[in-house]
Amino acid sequence: MTSLSGAFPIPVINVNKYLWSAMCGIDTSLSTTYNGIVPFFPLADSRAADAGWGAKPYVVYDFMFKFHNGTFYPVKKVQIMYFIRGTAEDVITWTNAIGTILDREDVAGQAINEYLADNDPNAGVFFHRLRVMQIDMVNDNRQDLTVRQQYTATLVVEMEYHITKDAGFN
Image (cartoon, rainbow, N blue to C red):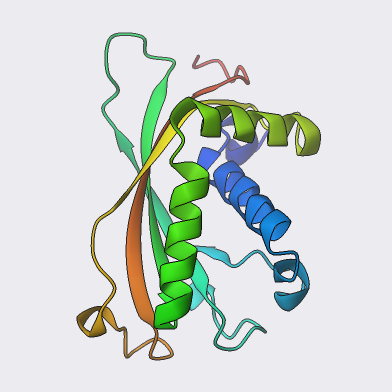
């Protein structure tokens, strides 16, 4: 029996894995600093709980389906919302890194496809393009006092992809 997540891949998870791999490839201390945990948590800070990295930065994410352009229905459009939390310096650094890594249109899509070919060839998703927009600024007014007194920045990552697994709805 096939699970829903097996029949319908969740592309944001593939983007998160690629992004973390790219960040760890640049800063090789990240993997050991986070003890093998990928600090991207779905939907809310409560999913981050008291993860074993103390005051280190992390990302909370969600996603929304958007209307796609044109009539070619297999290509889907989604917006990922990334809420980057940490100290002011960490939030600015991670926001800049995530934006730079992902805001490369079809080049980012191809990089994710190559990552998946090497690491998860049965992912069932093909990425076309990604672009990034920051929708707020990091300042004292954006400090979240309910969550470890950390700052927050919000990025929107718009991505286009299509599912390559045939679950009977393609």
